Structure formats: C-alpha cells, structure tokens
Length: 265
Image 1 (cartoon, rainbow, N blue to C red):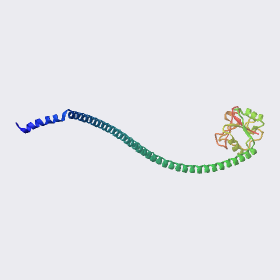
Image 2 (image 1 turned 180 degrees about the horizontal axis):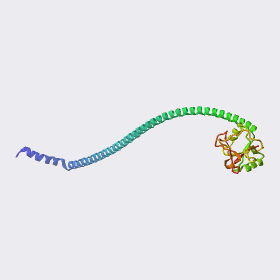
Image 3 (image 1 turned 45 degrees about the horizontal axis):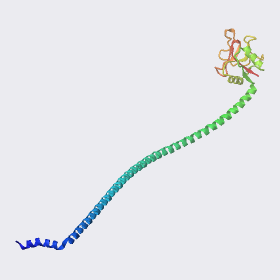
Image 4 (image 1 turned 60 degrees about the vertical axis):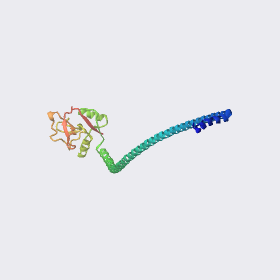
C-alpha cells in the first residue's frame, strides 16, 4: 500500500477524533450563523435591488410624465405661436384695409369739401340773385299797386253769369263792370285774368254804337282782328279773350253766354 494514501485516510479521522464532539458542534453553529448572515445579506440585497427598481421605475415614470408634459407644452406653445402669428397677419391685413379705407375716406372728404365749397359759392350767388329778385318783385309790386290805385280796384266774379247778371254782381259789391279807356289799363286788365271775362262795354241800347256802363262813348278799342262782327246779329256784349295777345283781345259775343266778369270799384 501507498503510505501517503494511508496517511491521508488516517489523518482526517485522527483529526476528527482529536477535535471531538465539541469542535464539531461549534462548526455547525458557525455554519448556521454564516447561513443566517448570508440569508440576511441576500434579503438586503434583494430589498435594495427592489428599491432600486422601484426608484428606477418612478424615475422612468416621472421622466415620461415630464417628457409628455414638455411635449404637450411645446405643442401648446407652437399652437399659441401659430395663432399669434395668424392674429398678427390678420391684424396686418386689417390695418392695410383700414389704411386703404382711411385714404379713400380722406379723398372723399376732400372731394366733398370741394363740392361743399362750390355749392356754398353757388348758394351765395343764388341767394344774392334771390335778394335782387325779391327787391325787384317788391319794387314791381309797389309799382303795380301804384298803377292799380290809378287804374282802379279790380276783382273777378266767382260764378259764370251772363253779361247783365255779371254787371249786377259787380253792383251788389259796390262796383261795376270794368271800363278800359287806355292802353295801359288794357294791358293791366289783361294781365289780371287767365280766362275769358266780361267787360263793361256793349251796344245793347243801340246797335253798332258801343258804350261803357257809365254811358260814355268808346274812344279807343282793342279788338281782335275782324272784331266786332256781330255774329248771327246777336253779339252785343264785349269780352276779353285772354288766349290771344294782351293788347288786342276784345271780342263781341252773345250777352246770354255765361262767363265770369271783371269788376272795378
């Protein structure tokens, strides 16, 4: 046999025999203590790893939330910037439109001001002319009143009547049918009427001899051409036919015809 192998086989037994039960029990305690320590370390390591994982998870979640929030914030910012840019563009367009409208209004105001000035000048001119015309009318009215006072006070009957009834109407109002004994009065009486009217001239008493209502003889007549013609032998009273000229407008007609008459006080 090999002595070394025998020695190896014997030595552990001898050592175990020499150590004894006490050394063996102590070794078992140390081994259990080592196992407990190992278990605690393992638990601590496990817990630490778990906490680290939890912290990492929390960090990742927070990082994700932060990134998401930043992304949303960035989107909101971009949207706000875009809206702001659109608002600026819209305001610029509105400002351009308003500027254009302002220029148009200023031009329109200038044109209207020029038109106003022109109209004001025309108004002043017309007002001046109106004053001049009013002055002339006043003067003419005064002259006409003056002439009327010389020529007599005239008024016209309201109803259509024959020559005799028209004369009676004038008498009832303190007057008589008008007597025309001058060119001036003929023009004045003609301007007084716009229709055919009786005057105070007739040849009722004696055919062919015209006399006024005051029984004075006719000295100057203002007959229409071809008048008096005593048409049908029954035209004995005289009218003014205003439709013709102002001067020569007398016409003899039947005294029974009904027209208005001009009275003179």
